Length: 630
Image (cartoon, rainbow, N blue to C red; front, side):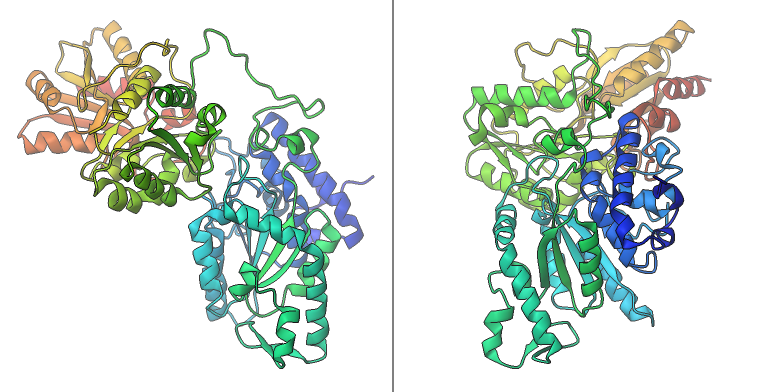
């Protein structure tokens, strides 16, 4: 059978197909995604689940004149393949290749950056209104959002606003009962109840069409129904439907894997005035049995054998360094066993941050609040105010959404709670939307916060133990994605003095290297290389950004005239800036060179490639040492 996908470079080629050919195209697109991701890892299950929806949208709408906004972007691989990037898709998430998420700088078909959940409705609403104000021709805007992302407060804010302003927005609710892990909360349960009323919704929609054709109902400029007889109200309105209560016309639920029917429905509702919600039911991982059966594992499975369905997982041996997130998870279990006030809070990332360990052993001690980072922080603040000791774990990049909550609800009240920022620094292939680059600079100005960055997993474990003690106030611990160095971290936990660093090496030259976090090991290698070439350099592991170890900084200033600071965060306003400020405030005549992420949004690639690109690896630090000592 002749390949259809091979002849499709852009949606204009897709539109040349007969509708009867669309199921074949979906099969080919699904197979292409599986083939590519088997050897170049990415987000598999999400993209497999929306193949039919992707094809239907591009078949019915005229992108890029019409606009398509994806929520998160995990599910956008099919979209990328159909919009001019099939030949480059083998570079997906690779250094110098295409991004794993929608990016307007990459393609005019990507209407909005999508890296964090729940923003699609707000963004698409703004685009829809702007198009209506600025264009004469009628354009359409579509937002695709998952059921898990609907738990985010921003999604509700967007829906509320969409019901008020005139717009032609279509919200496609992709309901697969999955986030990365299984979704939680009232919205998930509500969608289950909506699904059970499928027959009712189908006949209600048919009744509305009948009444509309015969002039019994019409719409105002906002797409709201004007009913000529109150007796029709009960027939065409489901007052228990959240979306219709908000004056959003609701269609569904419908089978999200029936591409021909999806095309039919999209065509029929495309030109309806006013905001609309199309509720589709899909299966995450559709078309690849292992992903269908274990969608959470196959969300981003790494390399796998596409024939056998076996994941290619490097063997774990006694020489395998531990993952920071796993040490966090095991340590949290230990702390919970020691202290019955310790609880865990996660915004829908129990497996990603390894809070799943505590969830497995003590499920009543973990609160998964759904994709709602701001709520996670304020909810944790409430737990702390009530006397518990919450460990709130949020990826560094996602913690940006909780900035006000940290300031107003936690720091202002000086509450005893622990915020663990996983995936801090350069995280790798997920790129600009996911790098934890800004936490140090963002939070060091907030009063009452203690901010620490462990160099290794033993320090992480001890910092967690220290932070769990009463009286410390809000304690923030940030650590990177992936492996640390090989250390035995299973020993007894020890309290660490807050605001105190460690001198790792005393050199004899005029230069000292001050490091914060795991890049201390790259600095250690650079210093050892310099020493082998006759340059003796001091090395200090500062451990705490706030409070800074001022006694140690005084020691540095008394023995050295030159300093290099190294951090896995933006140099603007971060750790190096804090050191500079201290030296300036205390009239220390010190020349300082800061190493960190430059003033830009870092690209995607492996962590090693990015560290080298920005001069943050051992080679880059060594070259800076040499230049400082010349």
